[in-house]
Image (tube, rainbow, N blue to C red; front, top):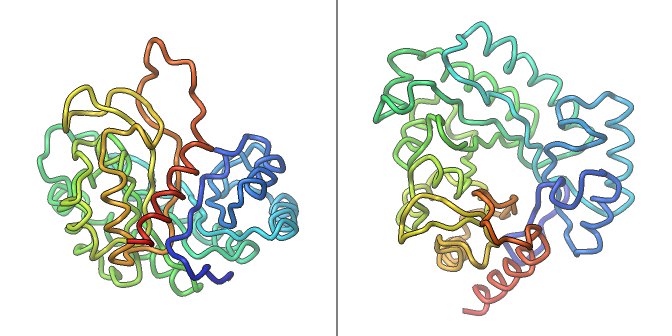
Length: 297
């Protein structure tokens, strides 16, 4: 596992943001001065957990040859509605952890991502974690099994919130979710800021402060509302986002709350007059400027 630079947090990026051709995307990471990869999909046209042994070997060699390191394996494990039932979760998600750990052995990540599950009843339940405790308590046991396997293999499991339907749609639900886990101390929370916004919680310093005890990783992306603190409407660059990017970044650095911030593509609908849709380099430079400014203050 590679060592972090002395100035924290490091900046990572989903590999596909640099292009859907894996080799070219790695080259762009190098050209943009990035050292850390968050691997998710478009790796030889596949998601991370679907790589064959030969593809994995080639990918590892390509990454090493460029002096890059893998920060997170962003799997889609547990990204499903709880209504499919325990047996399907075991077969479709938990059973695949062992293969992900084989992949991790070749790539040496720091984090392995699990996704916070969803429920088709989300709109009908004000507290989704309480709903799961009553109607699908087996889910927490499956997360505990996955967390144990990942932790015992030497990696840190991180659980990321998704958008509509996610059982973790506000900070208190995230805290309650972790409280329901037996192995909570072995895992961390990935706060995808805009995902939680889409699920109903506007990003704020208050949300960050609430999540800080379980926080291990943060995903940033652009997006704009039509009114103050309103729902996400339009996609945008990170600099033009409606949520307080600079203030939250300053607080994260002040508190040394995580070792890396990961850039994601913006969410929201394109504006009718939009002509510029690829903000990747702009977002990278803006985030670098924020990190640099926060370190000075």
